Length: 468
Image (cartoon, rainbow, N blue to C red; front, side, top):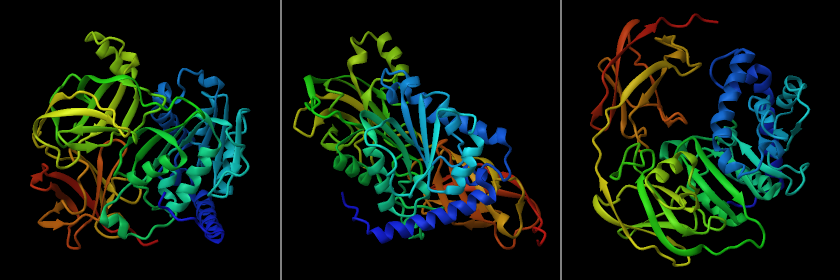
């Protein structure tokens, strides 16, 4: 792939920097730096967030990640475990959990917190490889909210490459990266908190380089891009088709019974159910969807998930469980109106077309649902000082939202935001500094997304923070 080979001295320098910074954060307030809900979280608050993350990120995907295997028989590697926020709950599901972190202080605290668990092993790593772990040993590798803090794309790729080494053939790897490509983000110097971006194109190139199947690549272009890879079985069947290709079903991804596909917004994703694809061979790199001549790479190619199976079975679609689901997001420039849609493989196999209607959706008015300070997420917004940077939690924005098309009005002032990001909840976070002449007391804020304006929301501004 395009990333350069990293000199050993570079690796050592990055390793020392990451260890120093994360050891320091672990000593100051490990729970907040792992889960920035609020400072000095209780054990129950911290553990509850870990249980929720494991449910959402692992258990809800077990039909993909376990593939008909008993989870209690599987070995799992967790990358970037911190003090064990997720580790405890992974250990309740899987046979063995091996958890790693670059910070020796994090690992020390994790050993203390998880001392009662017999099926957990903890390792301090170099930050760029897993040299102490055996090749082809793990059934599943998981990493959540870790690589977004790694300051070098090359180090991220070095970790992914060695994690792939320790994965068994047929095993799965699910990991999260920051894949922002906005110019404003690229301008910011990266460190061990605001890490480097790994864009969608580089993830796809990495998969090709290691000959991995990409089953899923969701949230591309956002701070929380999730990738699921499968390690191919040597000498497995590499044919892309098992029979003539045919699209048997189509609909909106999140609302499959709706046949009209919006060209932008939250529902601008098309799902196709396709007969004839060999799921052991095809993936998000080898399948392409042609929409009236516009070729689009999908973000999911894999089994039909259980929630959709019930629906298509009720529609009388035969052998629905043997079909392959293909999901794709619609790019800017996709045609409006009726279009011919085909599935094709890189080797030339193509399905007959089906007609799909693409429509321009009604605009969604953004809505501010929460206003907090950007320091600790508290409701104490201050007229001056660090807590004069406010964070708006906004719904109704789409993936095009950025500092170029978002403005925040506070009182009479129109402000360019300091930061705009998409959270894994689907909400956007918009941060802006209060005007220097704002008054203490009730104030009003409104958000503009292009020509669309939210309803005004009133919030309280407190006096300046007392000097320490």
